[in-house]
Picture 1: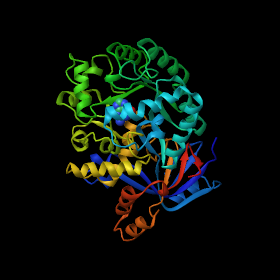
Picture 2: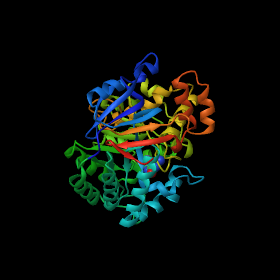
Picture 3: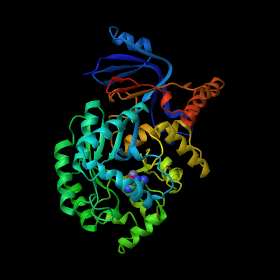
Picture 4: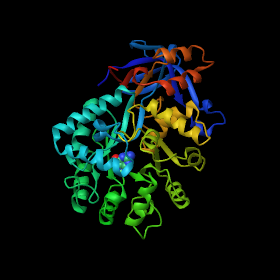
Length: 430
Ligand code: GUN
Ligand code: ZN
């Protein structure tokens, strides 16, 4: 168990969603300090108030640094850590050239352990405390990931990626083994400490209709689990899906017809959506995950964040490692800003921070546990230095307010801006 303490700095909390406020920054409350007891945040307020409540406790003083909820990355592939930044391919060729050969290596438990640990250490060093990850088809890759997260005390969600077609020999399961292995992994891991199992059909091109149906039945039997998959990422992928499922009304229907559309469903990318798809996603309150560095890196398209938010969709933010080109949620926020600019809808820094914490936690249905600094939340915290490099420092020096300072770090910051990370109240050497 972690030591209790008072944390002080520029403590940033969300009182509401900045997307619901006339001025985005009105959603934010700044405080001087928070009280951390038994790995949870128990109070937030003035520093002298916190000291009066717990005068015996050590104060971890972070000066002018920003103290906020650890980042929540709502869509990653930890097995793609070692092939991040692979050149020159678009989605299907990128999967076949880089991803599938690398994912093949995860039948080796020792390799899976090595990459799981490396991935979590890298993402923690970038300020990310919670992720929702795809594993590979190998159940051992799920064990490796959950054991690595458990050792670090992290709240994570993950699942075995299911594929029974259009993937190489050695990287395919079957209808039965996908169902049975997923079910055994739910029994082994779901709800153990801070770990959550996610039912994970990769995407409809790599699952037969029978496999999608079996996973739909599994989800029905385990409504406590999230379900994650990919949706409408690239135009030629969508054409392929339509040719594989000639009776489907659209891409989403290839999930919907097998019971794979639901409130606890998380759909990665969701760029090229048709009206019916948007309507059904909203009706179910499903989660859509924006993966901006991936969308530009693999050349997928420009996510319609402003339009989707305006119609009330539930949206999170993610790196999509290793289709995404960075482990950093700061870089990911910057890319979301740039895509907003290309669409003529600039995103405020408060909105970006909200997406990277509360927004992602909401899509993962964890917003009552992580993603904000508030009494009752788990103490997953990132401390951000707003002058971490000479380039940022000189810009921040003549910022007219805190938001200009924060925006400079969002646009230009990286892991050097992460001055400390706490997982369930335990400091990790950043
Ligand atoms: N669609 C199916 N699998 C993947 C993947 O691993 N990465 C991305 N970006 N898209 C996918
Ligand atoms: Zn993905």
